Length: 194
Image (cartoon, rainbow, N blue to C red; front, side, top):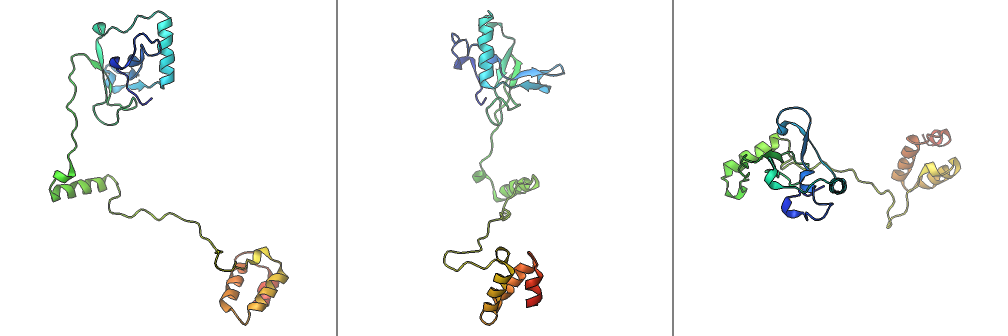
C-alpha cells in the first residue's frame, strides 16, 4: 500500500506487475474533473491479483504513447497512495512548484516567534507540559512491613490488631479505622473504636 508504482519500477513481463502503475489513484465519483473526486486505493496484493487477471484476460501491455493522462505523484506530503495530492492529470499539465519549508535556523527571532504562535493557534502544545499520566501506587514496599488491610480480616482479628496499636501507633490505628469506615464499615469495629 505504501509504494507509488511507476512504469520504470515494474517488470512488464511479470503479469502481477504489468498494470500496477495504472491501478492506483483511480478517480471515482461525480464531477467533470478527477481532482474533485475520491480515489480507489488498492492494497498491493489486490492490485497484483487484478494485474495478473488483466494479463490473463488478454489486455495488451501499457503503451505510454497512447496515454492521454499521466500519473503525478503527490507533490506535497507523504509519498503514498493515500495522499490526495497525487493523481492522474492531462499529459500537458505542468507539475506544481515543489514546496520548500524554511529552516527555522535561517529565520529572525520575530519570524520564529510568529511560527510558534501560529502553531499554538493550531493547537500544538509548545512549551506546555504534557498532562501527568496516572500511575499505579504501591501500598506495600519490600523494605517496610506490609500494611494491615481490615477488609481481608475478620472483625475479631481487626479488633485485636487495633488493641495492639492503641498505645503504640495512633497514626496506624486511625489509618485502619479510616480504611474500615470507607470500606466495609462493619459496626463491630466502628462502634467499639469510635
